[in-house]
Length: 152
Image (cartoon, rainbow, N blue to C red; front, side, top):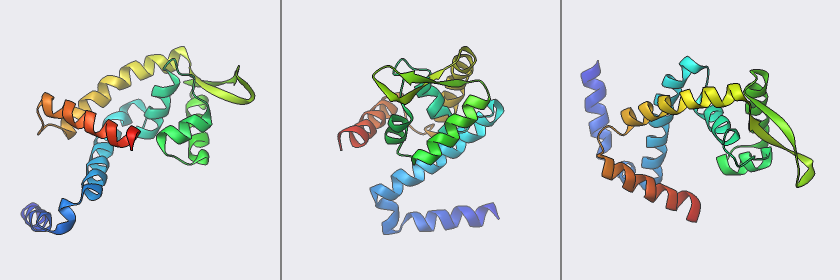
């Protein structure tokens, strides 16, 4: 069965779709997210909750609106992610000093400790996903993706 799967994949890799950048980025993202989710499961996190926790544990003090925009997620998805992290004592909502109508999301000491553990887990997952690339190629890919993500 594995041989049939491999031959099918190779056959489909020769299609025009397999050369389209949007498809390649989506496939690479799906594979990377899957590996990250596998590794993060031991910490009771997934890629999306990890992303929210990472931003909450930074010094940026993001609002839920900013999280939604930056992560390209619907506001309701962010609410659910923040609620889940908050119920575990990993983040808190605090009043935004620049806008009383808004809250910022901040990592708790427990959240920061979990985030620090999760960083190494995500790094290992990235290593598995990008194992066929050299460090130089990974840096190039990171730079190119950042340009597409933030300058496009």
